[in-house]
Length: 373
Image 1 (cartoon, helix red, strand yellow):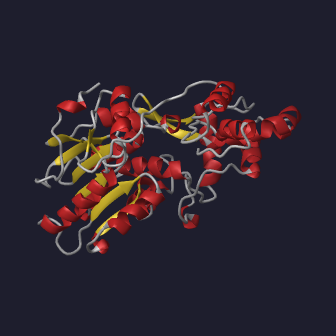
Image 2 (image 1 turned 30 degrees about the vertical axis):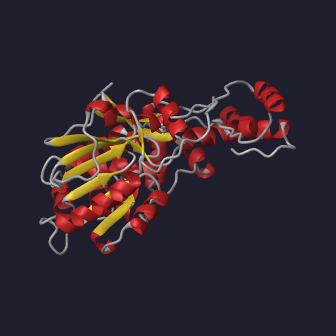
């Protein structure tokens, strides 16, 4: 692992014409720093002219609104959106004619019906048509698919379909497995996907795939992006996927300056194909590495506790940081939690769980006490 503590601390990036990578822990004010940098670029850049824009890519729509609302300058000079929305507007939609047919001249995607991109929610009719097409919809499989204990598993597994690099090729994979009784090899999954494409339906994950295909077919598309966006900044880069990283690297090959911000430890989307290594190993020509070490959110006691948990980036309190109370962490089963709480009291207790059903179990066990989750 790289030693983030060796990187210089950054408060403001003086040279806006360098590619950069910024590492920051929880409470460091990554979004605030990014907003300030966006304003700096707009103010001092001599490459924007009157029509070019600054792109800012976030992970969620909530983060998009937070950044847009935080800007105290001409917001029309920015394109702030999620990676899927950015690629759909700037690559997939304007160059959709390139994905209308496959390499054999057969219809790949009905672009006449293309109208945005949606969350992948498997449709029963698509699933049945798919199974019929691949010869899997006999009476036995029909009964199996419609069995209540299997039907939801089928839907949840198909909803987790995504694209992954296998060597130099892109293949379809199922990210989440629930034991559903359906075909799961790459060739059969492509047939399933095409059922939607032929009806003009594009899912969020398809936006990345078709952006990749369009760039492969017509690399000059990248020139269009670079000319329109001389700067692209990406927040929460620890949750990027291989395909997203591949696209960003191609854009950054020439002219466009790219900056990425994130925290390796806060990578939480491994199940969706995100790889923290993509952030850790991200490299571009003339890239500068920095860290934000101050924690604006937590007490000194909490900061000390965080520094004990992780050593890759040591955080510092601000001048306004209060001392705070001692931090105690209780780890154990629901029964262990219940026993400890009954012995020690329920004040200032916060419950952290990975799944909602565990939180509900704890709430049911200790229903008469008020806890924060």
